[in-house]
Length: 267
Image (cartoon, rainbow, N blue to C red; front, side, top):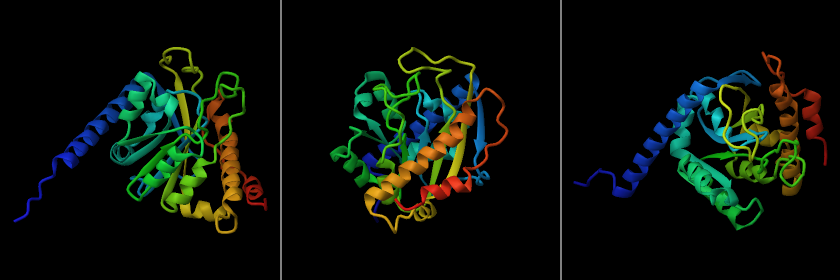
């Protein structure tokens, strides 16, 4: 009779994933002890568990401490990250000893990228499959205190997320809109300040419907990529300022239909 025991390599991988899940649960408890989280949904909150989640993208990247938003994550999402997440991360960040090791510990696969459309990005696209959930920061760099990136350029969404959406094709995408973390930690300025309010809004979208709505069947690749970038930037610019305000936010209105129609006008 054949043995059904796990071979050593899959067993080690499984144990690593279980330990990673325990670490993420611990991080969640830690952030809840030191920060007050406010979670809002753009549309109706989907029932748990969030099945078929293939892409998690956080917009308004302002700090390396965005992992503090883990306090709003349901445990089944943490389990999916621990066992199935693929994180593309900047190679210059991953070579930093402390932060690089920390990011690599968050997911089973963390791939270095140069932030250019080269072989490193091709390697990410080749690893996308039905078992993976990609976690990405679509802007690809952090906003500094002046509202620009470190080179003094506006914070735009990079086109790589359009490549991912094309490759994934179906399932669901979770967009997380950060209210910003400069009140907690400005890039380059030491440790985060505790006991602050953290605001984030979530929007769950069906990937296939999203692609059709932006005209994936009608446009060539470059035009479609531009349309995805424009759409995500408008969503970010509409939702994030409301989260960053000091006044209470009880609800967030979806992006007006007229604004969504402008996205799908011919290019």
